[in-house]
Length: 86
Image 1 (cartoon, rainbow, N blue to C red):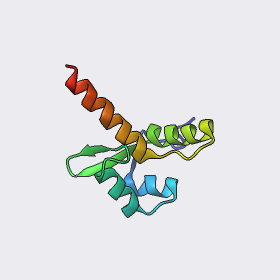
Image 2: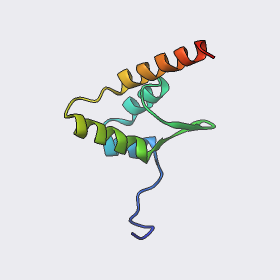
Image 3: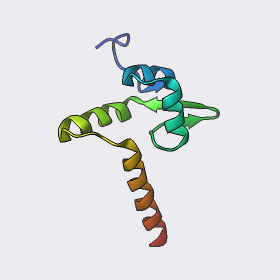
Image 4: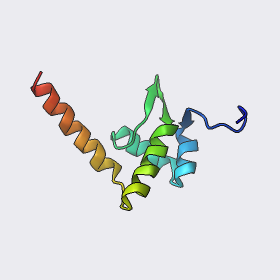
């Protein structure tokens, strides 16, 4: 693959929204609510390409609706439990 045809490591929120076929405002809201994976650099968010690919794979493998908000909630619970047991 040449560099011009390879996938980027990160998408801007607008690019990710276009890939996901949702409005950018919807994706920004999900990111701010910690319901969608992103990286914050100063005041900008970027979305890892792998996060989008993992979500697509998860939905395909399970054949079910992938609820990102539920995944984030489960992660929060696991982090809280880990904090308590330190």
